[in-house]
Image (cartoon, rainbow, N blue to C red; front, side, top):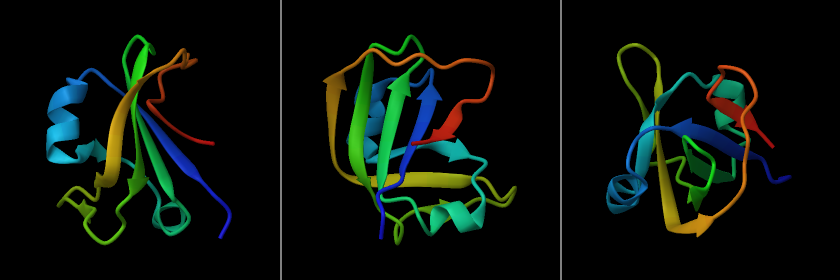
Length: 92
């Protein structure tokens, strides 16, 4: 399977997310979920992110069909990532 990384931009505290090994809930199509291998949860200003391996088996959908993204082996790293536009979700 080719690597597909889910990038999400958040206002949430990265240390809190890292402690829970999960990010918030996101609108992600089911066909994309099956292809995602890695996760990057980027702080709103784009200066730090959590990198981790997507935990497909532990991730779950809420009643509104949004996906709570769980990850393994997460770590916070410095970065310089810019999001253009309003969409907080992208795939690389």
